[in-house]
Every structure is written in structure tokens, then in C-alpha cells.
Length: 370
Image (cartoon, rainbow, N blue to C red; front, side, top):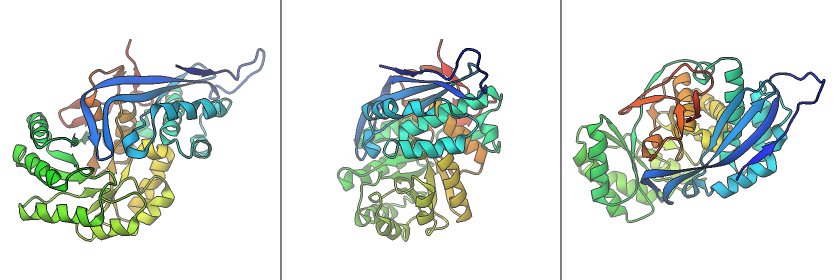
């Protein structure tokens, strides 16, 4: 399934070379080596969408939508439907105007953040490629080397131990443990298993907005009894319940994820101040909003985390460029390409164990595999 929108070109009429001339998209389905389980459910394969934007001079940019039903209810089908309704409205716009394009996309896709992200990314990628600039340099060019955590998805205690052992042997030192959605005592045992498998490792928890403040605090207190002190707790409480989040923040540092999708949301989170964090995800906010959220967080003295959904090297390379461009990101969570059973692309960042190196290629540097 695909959809193609033509075209700004008319015989004998001169147009700007940076005008968006064509937009197309199609499903991107890739099996996973390990099912990606979070509190809201399990995804056995990446069911994403690939978006292509072509400028008037033929320059092509690519974007990826990675809807994750268990995260916010978006699906591949809903993303394709949103693109069918709205992608054509970009044709004829200037790719250089990323902020007005992002504003327009926010209006077009109020409930389809992944679709917005894919279009915004493809436009930005095309413009950067045309101008021979890397996204990393445009985002600020601060640092090219990052270190990612690895996610311990939901499952059994034995699964947590085995997965942690495998990646600890590859050099990973920070383990993000998915909790919530089930028995809290099993979550406690799973965290203990991660500590047993990587006794020198650091851990943090991610409940994906699934716990009450009471259950989140119970888990933190029980871990303290066995001398496990998580770095922070990512979005322990239900989306939009700020009071519950603040209650947990009195006990442990929190990383705000589902509660912050816009700069206005970030202003609410700013009341937390340091040492708390905000998680930037282009898949929930787009590129421009992520930059503005980062500015709000830093003005409030909060740390930044950069993460994503179940994304291939394409979308993850954009997020790596964002993290490296901004610099000083407290927690890098860009591991999902490791879950993919195959890579349909070439280029993008390189990864050795937890170590990410960002390249100099124009745009995000990712192209379909030939």
C-alpha cells in the first residue's frame, strides 16, 4: 500500500528548488528478534511507515513513523489513514520553512504524532541533503559519541536475567527495566535479576504511565531494602496525573515521558526542576517541538533524556543527531535497532556495544538498502 501526491512542476514555469514536489509513503514491516513488551502490551514486529519527500530539484528525504499501540494507541493503520488525509497539504510548501511546516503538521495531525514526525523528518532530511548539511550539525554539533542504555522488556524473571547477561557481556552498563502492567512483586524480582546479572550496572525503571503513585513508591522502597537505588523512575504514573507524578518525585528522581508532548506540557514539568528529567521523543512531539521542549527543560535546570518507540536505524539516527547536536544529554535510550531481526537501510549512526558514533553524511544519512 502506498500513496503518491504529484506535483508542483508545470512546463515553462520556474519554481524554487526547495519546494516540496512529491510525498509518498508505504508500510514498513520488520520482524523483531525479541518482542518489545511494555506495561501496555507486547509488539512482536515493527509495524511502521516509511515516508518519502521529493523536492523540486529531485532531492529526496526520508522519514519514519513508528506508532506503538501500547504506548499511545497509534497504529500503522491509523498512521496510514492520517497520511492519506493530510500529507498532500505539504506539496508546494518551502522545505526551508521547517517551523511553519511543523506548526501546520501539528494542526493536521493532532492525534497522529508518528505521522507528523515522519513527514517533518522527511522534509528536514531533504532540505539538509540539498544543502549538504548533517542534521547533527544543524541541531548544534556538540558531540558525536553517545552511550546508550539497553531496555529490559516485560517478561519473566528468567528472561530479564538472560537478556541482561547477554548485553552486559557486550559492554552495556545501564539497564532500563520495563515495569508495570502486571504483578508488582514480579517486577521487584525482575529488577533483582537484572542486578544479579550485572552487579556493577546501573538501572532505572520505566512504567509507561501504568502505576499508581502508591505502587511506584512501594517498588522504590522495596528496592532500597536490597540496596538497589535506581537512577530515576521514568513516567511511573498515569498520563496527565501531575499530582501523582509529583508525589513519586518526592521519593525518587523522575523522567517525564507521556506527560510531555508539547512545549506547553514542558512548562508543567518545569515545576519539578532538578534533578528530574524530561524525555525527548521525536515520535511523540516531532523535531521542532522536541527542540522547544529541550529549551524549556534546560531553562528549568532539568536533565534531558532522548528515547523513542520501536524504531529502525532511520528514526533512531535522527534522535541520535538530536542528542549529539544538543549535547549533555543525561540519558541516551536509542537501542531499538538492536531488536530488529533485519535492517532494511544502510547508513546512519554506527553502534558498537552501547557506543554510538554519529556520522557526517547530509541529513540523517540513512538510505534504503540496495
